Structure formats: C-alpha cells, structure tokens
Amino acid sequence: MTHTKSQKAPVSPLLAPARLGRLHLSNHLVMAPLTRNRAEADGTPTPLMAAYYAQRASAGLIVAEAATPNATGQTYPNITAIHSPSHVAGWRLVTEAVRAAGGGPMFLQLQHGGRVGHPATSGLTPVSPSPLPLPETIFTPDGHRPAVVPREMTGDDIRTTVADFANAARNAVAAGFAGVEVHSANGHLLHQFLSGNTNRRTDGYGGSPAGRIRFVREVVEAVAAAIGPERTGVRISPRNTVNGIEETDTDTLYPALVAALGGLGLAYLHLVHADPADPLFGRIRAAWPDTLIANPVLPELSAARIGVESARLLAAGADLIALGRPFLANPDLVRRLALGAPLNPVRDRYLMYTGGATGYTDYPALDDQPSSASMVALDGPRVV
Image 1 (tube, rainbow, N blue to C red):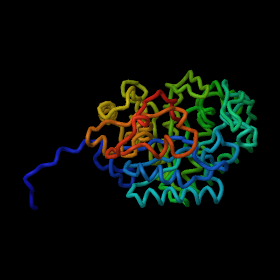
Image 2 (image 1 turned 180 degrees about the vertical axis):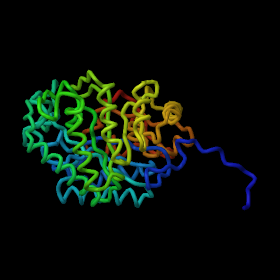
Image 3 (image 1 turned 60 degrees about the vertical axis):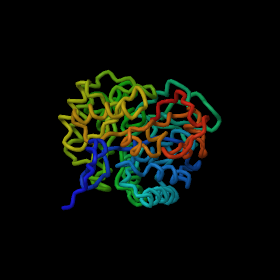
C-alpha cells in the first residue's frame, strides 16, 4: 500500500461509519423527526419537502417527520400522512430526492395524535384511551381553539388503529423508506395509553403498567409483522410532560415496555432527552438488546456542545445520536461538525410551521454568504 506523507486526523466516533442492523450508515448521526407543516392540506408531501430532505442527505440516517396512519390521527394543519396512494407518491419523491443527493437510508415516523387533534383540522372527533381533553388550546386552520373532549376508543377502534399502523408501514416501504419509527412519545396517542393521567381505562388496556403498555406492544408487533422487525423502530420519551402528560411511575413503566419489546428483534429504540446521568438511561440500555438511538438535551447549539454531549452518550452505551434543531438550521451539519465550524442558529419560531421556503430550505450552507437577517437567533419552540 502506498502512503502519502500527510496523515489524516483521527475521525471522531460521531462521524465514523456505523451500522443499523444490515444497513450501512455513513456516520453515527441521525436526523430526528421534525414536524414542519409543509405538506398539502390532505397530508401529501410536496416538492419543497423533497428539497428540504435532500439538503440534509449527509445524515447517516434520516427519520422523516411524523406521518399519520389514518385521518383521525391528524394533529395540526399541513402535517404529513401515509394512508393513501397520493401520500405514497409524495413520499416517494422525497426518498428519491435523498437518494439522488447521495443520502443513506430513511425511516418514516408513524404518529397518531390521539387527543392532540381537532375537528376543525381533520373533520373528525379525535380519539384517546379516555375522554380527557388536552389541557390547552390547539392550533387549527382557524387559529388556536379550545381542545375538544376526545372520544374514548372502543375495542373495535383499537383493533382498527393497530391495523392502520401496519398498513401505513407497508405504504412507507412502498414509498422507498427502509423502515418506520412508531412514535410512542411526546404526548401523542401511544404515549397517552402509557401515561396514567391520560389513560383511565379499566379494561385490559389500562390500569397497571402491563395494561397500559399493551396498545403500544400490539401496534409495534403488527408493524413488525407487516414489514419485518428489522425495519421497525420505536420512539419513547420518559418523563416528557409535553401535551399534558403527567407520568407518576416512569421508572416502572418504561422498563416494562422495554422488556415487552426487547425480544422482537427491532431495528432500534429511540430515546428522547437521553441523559447518561439518569439511572433510567442505564436501565434501558442494559435491558435493550438492539440499537439504541439517543436524542440528547442540548442547552446550546454549537459544534462543541454537540461533541461533548454525544461523546457522553456514546460512552454510556448509545449506538447512534439523533439531533433535531441542529439539522433544522444546518443542512450541512455533518460537514460543520467535522470542521468544528459555527452553526446557524434556529430562526424565528413562527417560521417553523408557517409553510413556504423561508425558515425551511433557505438556511445557508457553510460556503454560502447569509444575510444578517437570516442569522438572527430567537428562542424557538420545542420541535416534537
């Protein structure tokens, strides 16, 4: 072998190649799912969305934003869906654009909003494990409106919804995704079944942790049966209080859930707000036999902070690192981290979900010359 005189610097573990089951990843970075409300009103992904994801194709793995498995599961206006042929065709444009840009595999997050929905948006009464409304207003096409009381899911509703998740997973694979992520976090339907303050059921889907994890287990099992466990991931967010969630038995609930899912041979478990100093992180890592994706808490957006927090998580046993806002604002995030370059700040929070290219596909790459207006950093909302 011929050697040159110059020697390359050691590759950071975060930027080294990785594997996800049989999938080869160019690095250990995962683009976390980020709802951006740029779909058509019916949930069909747009060419603008294809451009957005193609800009971020250097991520080792992209988990595309939440897509609803049925019409009842719609949360907000202009979020994506994956339950009709037009949805499949729209998402196929996205996956093809990422591949054309040299990107790696993509998973699609499947999310049912449960009580996080409104008839003014979906035309349907939202459903939930129990008839307990969201304790806050919800954004609709007519602006913020009071939440409605959701309809308690019947046994038939549960069985139908489980089947809808499985069908949505098949649609995702048909659209070119390598797999799907079942969203069991952030206060949406599956998380509503997990949490005692949103699940007051007295049947086999409520009560003890074993009852409250049942719906999640059935959804994941159905999805794994439909497309293969190696194509199926799950996202959880222990202690996350978003969307009115109040957990009182987190340290019992999540080990039970991990144990119930750990024997299925799934692609990964995606842990939100992962903190290696939390004893629960260690318990989940020890109990989970497959790939663990850790989504860290970042008190500041900088290459140095990302490096520090990622190193802590990798040392504690995480296999891959998921980042949300850094990818949102930096289409070339992988290159910036490799160079230790400054990061674009996340801009005005109102650009997060307003539609159009502004605040979406116009974040500059490292070699571009941003205008002063595009570099104004304002506090934004938590992206879930």
